[in-house]
Amino acid sequence: MDIEVFISKKGQVVFTCHGEFKKQISQIVVNAINGEIMFIFKPDLQIWKPNCTLSPELCKKIQNQLFCAVGYYKDRKLVASEYVRFMCRS
Image (cartoon, rainbow, N blue to C red; front, side, top):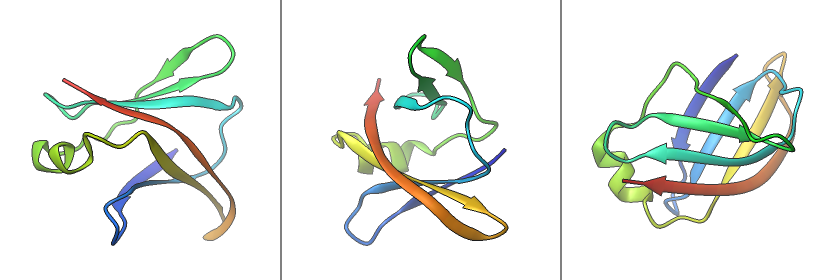
């Protein structure tokens, strides 16, 4: 699945997913030291790590956010979106 990360004009984190997950996202966690992203799913807290990371500079900008937006695309059209818990930990 292709994942892209954007920062809105208001400084909020937005993840775009080109596809759908089989489970609901519980939260997204970013390691501020190495930029690693982890999607944690309900109900069993299964972890999935996409093949992308965030820069240290970007982690500093988003470190105090509690939620992020996730948009789901199919055939290049937004089909759904949601807010999920977000944590940037060091």
